[in-house]
Image (cartoon, rainbow, N blue to C red; front, top):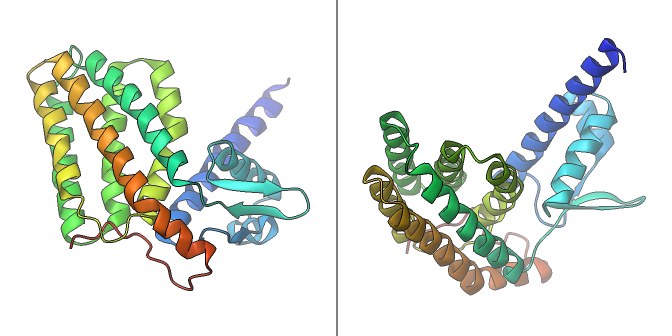
Length: 241
């Protein structure tokens, strides 16, 4: 492979990642709704790029279950089952628990301060009913702990699962008071600050298990709304009563 070929390929990878993030953001914001088709040609024209990075970005999203791709029919935003979402949270519970245990001996004062800031941001966004903002801060909180663990296998697994949870948790929890779940982040942070690995792992695991329970309880009726052709099912709804 020549230097120019390598550079071109690397640039293509970066471009596909940009497309992936853009499509994911649009799904979170409700611009692309479950069942809606994402047209490669239209998106490529809008972004001023070839269809190749768009196709690759969509394939990356398909690999983690965000979209489905059918021959001759293109990509569509998919609606997972409540069990599927709950299963992801259960896997995350062990990933986050291990990351927290490993991070305890590596966490710095700067990391603690950033984690605290992210909890405050979650609460502020929740008060403003900025539900994508809540999940953005939530993902960053857990991502920072995983990164602090310096375990690259954990990072890769987290990166695969985080977009799935981020997208559908934002879109599919109507009329649910999640303030208590948001506040559970404080328990994780307190344990990290105290350098207590087992307590940090238990808090992280318990948090994700509670998310799993919430999804199993509340997600099915949202999915039913889409299946029934609801013209405006509740999106981004992490509402407080």
